[in-house]
Every structure is written in structure tokens, then in C-alpha cells.
Amino acid sequence: MAEFPRTAVGGVSMPRMIVGTNWFRGFSHKSAAKDRFIKSYQTRKNIADILEVFFSEGIDAVMGMPEPILSDAIADACDRTGRRATLILTPHFNVLPGGPAENDPEPVFDRCKDLGARFCFPHQCVTDCILDKMHREIRGMDGYSKMIRERDMIPGLSTHAPESVIIADESGADVETYIQIYNAVGFLMQVEVDWCMRVIRNAAKPVMTIKSMAAGRITPPVGLAFSWSTLRECDMVTVGTLTPDEAREVIDISYDLLARRVPDHELQKTRSKKVLEGAGSAE
Image (cartoon, rainbow, N blue to C red; front, side, top):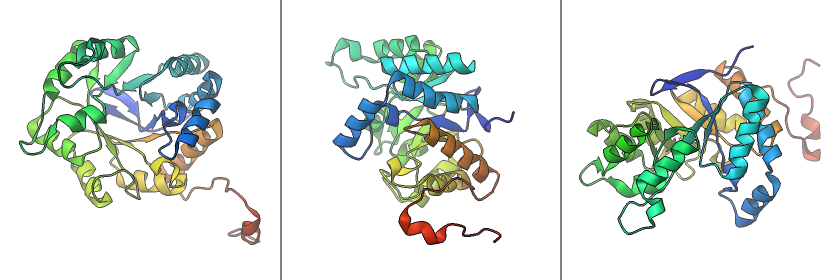
């Protein structure tokens, strides 16, 4: 059985689609009410059911910071599919001295290692804080990368600022990849979409893109068509879904788009679309 296309990051084989976790953990980017709905809906079983769909297609990489319910669901999906999940963890930690000792970088990286992380990227709230545009450097990043590598994890940058990619490349920062927001409508992006497109295309390392469907503001055929048609073969798309059916849908649509076929997925129906039924048929 064919599996989803793969690439490599830091010598590790990776699926070009990565499972996002905002729709597991309650980060809707829409409203507090939607966040509460997600948290009330997502049980260990529901999350494991979604992950099983992804893992069965070889999409076995998960991005985020797992809470106990998510860690348990990942373990369940691995047991069901015989897969071993590749965890991409994005921790935050004290940048300045004086914070809680347990939030200092080294104990935070220790926890990531204990959780089974293969990749460990300082979260955007850290990376974009230490980004120094004036002196064109990412302050202290190589020290953090050294700590990460000492724990047998692979370092990268999670950033919302496209300047981070440029500056990391030109300074030779010790990172193997970047997490960068990228979607067709520029949701949460700091500059125009075509600027980010250029930054990603010229990046020295593979890029893991996030918010491909702008947190549900773009439908999957539109958001995924943009991503798959403009990214390089080494780049990845992170996708979050709420149900197993949504997971199956984004996978099938992506197979079609990567094969340069117009997606032939089931369309949602309303009474106002009645006259459109049968459009494009041979009748």
C-alpha cells in the first residue's frame, strides 16, 4: 500500500504532512467558546481515533506539547497501527534569569526528552523574543541547540517572524528546520504571503509550515492546494483536524493535489445547492 510522501529533516525520515494538535488541545484561534468545545469534545479515544487515520497512512509525526490525554492517545494509536510516532515538541522556557527554576531551559529540555521528543524547537514565544533584528542574530540559540543535542534531540526554530529564517541561515545557526506560518490568506503572518513564499523557497533547511487552513478560515481544498503547489518537495504541511472523517478528508485531498488532480471529495450539501447537484456529470 502506498504511503504519504516523505522528506528528511536532520537525517530523520519525515512525512510531508504533520499532525497538528491545536484541535486536540483547545486552541481554536476563534473564540473562548470554541476552545471550550474542543476541550469538552476531545477524549483520549477520540484523539486516538484521529491519529489512527493519520498513522495508517504513514503520517506518523505529531507537533505540539502533549498533555497526559494526548500522550496516552498517541500511545494508543501507535499500538493500533504498529507505528512509532515522531514527536516534534515546542517548549517555552525562561529566557531571562529569575523565573521558576523548573522552567529554566535545561529542566524543560529534560522533560521533552522524557516525553520521547525526537525534535525540540523553542516555541515562537521564545524564538521571536530572542530575535535581534538590529544585530541580525538569534541571541543564545546555539547554546539552546547545544543543550538539545546533548539530550539526543534535534534542534530547530518555531517562529512567526520570517526574519528568523533569514537570520538563522545567514548566521549558520545550529538548527535543522523551521516552523513557519504559511497560508493563502496571510492569517497571523507578519508580512505579505508572497514574501513568506520567497523566504520558504530560499530557506537553507526544510520548513514545517503551520496554519495551512488559517485555523478553519479556509476550506481544505483551497488551503491545501495553495500549500502543496507552492512548497518545495522537502517542505511539510502541518494539519489539525477535529474528527477522523476530517483527517481522512485532508489526506485524500492531499493525495489528489500532489498528483496534480482536482480533488474529487464529497462536498457538503445545503438546500440552496440543490440545483448544483449533478454539475459536471455525464448526463
